[in-house]
Length: 394
Image 1 (cartoon, rainbow, N blue to C red):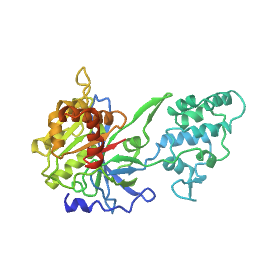
Image 2: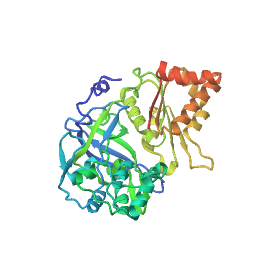
Image 3: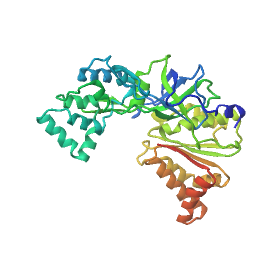
Image 4: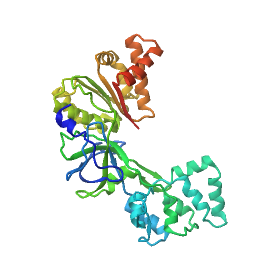
């Protein structure tokens, strides 16, 4: 790593309790018309002494609730929007109710706690019977709150009356920061941080909804105003090799591509002698090849020694990144035996497990190891002893 890259690794003064207010300066669609997904590229300015970061770090973003959702909740509650309530981010401090509902508390996803709170405040009758039927059945309660926000619930149980605004917000959960893998190298984009975000959109109970943070960035965050609270969450392990002559293999389907765009920008700037191999997967090449122009240009320039893509819906049989790994098993094993670092970013529940198993299979097939020895090589030798298998999964 260069001296410049090392310099930006200095711990930042900004944190969860003291965020920096970043400015959204650019916002571009990465997926093309006809895609089943809405993936976007966001550029935030850190000018004015903002936090520094190193490829592999994440940006923590504090979202705000959509104004329409806040207004609907306010209407249903019938409280003065200026009444002071507790600010969960500052001990002892209060903020006006409207501000609290906008900036401090989750509104788009209800919790089980609110249902008990309603039960204490609803009069005898049909609505109470329905409410208690839900509250007294753990599975039914989980299913009920999973698809509802506070507008859904306050509309359904409109006989409930909270004695105060403070009593209502006491039932809510504070908005936590949302962590996004940083998709840029600071040395390539001074005073900027780039994010690759899949926008979550869905409809339940007759109302269109969006993910809290992705919806905020896509629909509500103002442009060119220092208004987005952020800080850098430093990675303790998800880092490029200290020796830039080492080869790196990167597996990043979908938005998991983010840190590898940062890695490649840094490796290109450093003039790293090590080879770079990227596995990228999405649904369709024509509509979902994120950063296609950049990656194909890096391939032509030799920054990417190999680029293997898996577009699952472009053929009858679905093909994923782990299938591409199996296709290139001999070469992949050769790189690993030569000291290459192996990185994975993205979905922990399915993709990362499948990639992990593919590695074990390749160790068994190409290395001539029995199943136990292959698992030991991946789980212990690569991951723990040599620390050459690194994951950023969620």
